[in-house]
Length: 343
Image 1 (cartoon, rainbow, N blue to C red):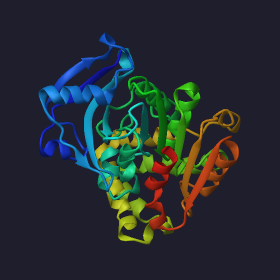
Image 2: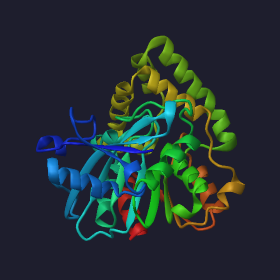
Image 3: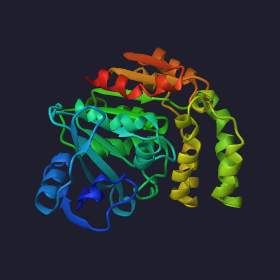
């Protein structure tokens, strides 16, 4: 059974970044009492229309865009938990299609929207089709995971549940890093449910990932022994991708990212890293079965998101194209590439 709760939003609250739910919940809609495919955006719109109004926010030159926020209950029994989501809709977009976006490890909706990250532009895809963004389990405003943990495979299952609760004839998936991996697993779990993929900055995999796991474990040990502030200090000494050092926006990513990590708290931060340490991309034989059109977006000189992974995916997936950014200004064009791919 799924449960959707839609908080009352008005004035400044509706325009606020998705850092926390408003203090009150206006309504609870038990999807078990209606078809499972209830359109989240439509249901939110009906709730706002009768008990409050979410004024439209404005996209970057893409016309008026309305934003509806709520939470979705996933799982059963002791594994029940809520994930926070928001639906972006714009006049003239294709109502039968939808795009679900998953953020990266220790990130969140609010982090992407407020930190200068190029994926803030994901919301502008609403000019093409409605967009659902959400906080992954244990991230942002979503509840921690239960027995399933934080593996990428489990997160792929969350994407599938979200898709089932959203009545759209054509659903496309996208995500960055961890979100890209979760999207791959979702397509493998429900191949007929999705019509396309966007894989942004895919993470390390296979042998390269096995070499990287000790860094996750060291970060967890440091955080548990010394706290998140010390973990941040140690991380600040590590070399960052040169492409991020070209502009002030790129250089600010470290502080913005750690603000979000600190907000997670120690336990959720460590649990997310433990899930990443236990995860890997699907094997090549599985990847070869994914036939939907796929756009891969990558940048150079990032050991956590190596170009080699993107090139492997391009060579392995049957219907994939690859765009590689060499400068920060080219990274900022990623949302445009996404809109063109989905148009």
